[in-house]
Amino acid sequence: MGRLSGKTALVTGAARGIGRAIALRFAAEGANLVLCDLEMDALREVAAEAESKGVGALARQTDVSSREGVQQLVDDGIAEFGMIHTVVNNAGIFFNAPFEQTTDEQYDRIMAVNVKSVFLVSQIVIRHWLRREIKGAIVNLASIGAAVAFVDSSAYCTTKGAVATLTRCIALEYGPRGIRANSMAPGIIDTPMLPSQEDNERWAKTAIPLRRLGEPNDVADVALFLASDESRYITGEMIFVDGGWMLN
Ligand SMILES: NC(=O)c1ccc[n+]([C@@H]2O[C@H](COP(=O)([O-])OP(=O)(O)OC[C@H]3O[C@@H](n4cnc5c(N)ncnc54)[C@H](O)[C@@H]3O)[C@@H](O)[C@H]2O)c1
Image (tube, rainbow, N blue to C red; front, side, top):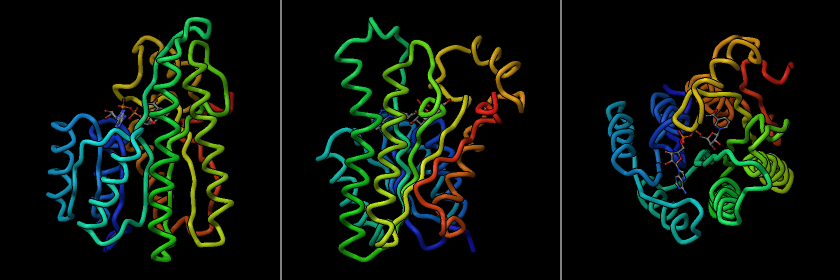
């Protein structure tokens, strides 16, 4: 019996990187999956790999910053599996730019993909949970950038601070209904999102006490804990998954 047997999990941005690892980790623990991304070829491969573990997996091309798109995704997931028990708001984007050169378009897009998506997905799923009295769990991807500043990353760090705050507000507001919300703050995780291999190697040698970059599975294992009943008395937390970065 898997740790998520009989549950359905919605994971955004599941085509690659951390989202892919979370989707496959949850599938290995028996969860049916409602997956979305913009990259459909890669997402279909993730869904097929999940199904080979004996669970159901729905793959949809959804832009998480669109209310209509997210509503359709949730409706399709409920139609397929009956209900959704847990949500991982993972989809996100990153860019490097000096603060004074960041454009309105860059700022608006990163706020929409990294923050508005968490508002939309969480709100639409919470409405479903309230109607059905489901004690669901939300897991959001923040970042160490929610707690410390990085040069040339002001817009990204701002979005992750917002995700951490939104997570705490949801946890407070819906705790009395048995709904939990937590976030994870990964450090430097080896995925296609990372802009510079040179920086990563330098960080691994100097700023990361465990002396290696994180792997997507390091984050997926924590997501599993936060989505499962093992974390039943934890809500509103942000868990650092950073190899000790925050000790510096
Ligand atoms: N990699 C790291 O070091 C790191 C550190 C801290 C936090 N995070 C966070 O973890 C999450 C996953 O990051 P990753 O490193 O796996 O990134 P990634 O770029 O490898 O994967 C992100 C996925 O999200 C998808 N996506 C982007 N915009 C989307 C949209 N509008 N709608 C639907 N899907 C969309 C992409 O297509 C991609 O498959 C992000 O929220 C990121 O900010 C990553």
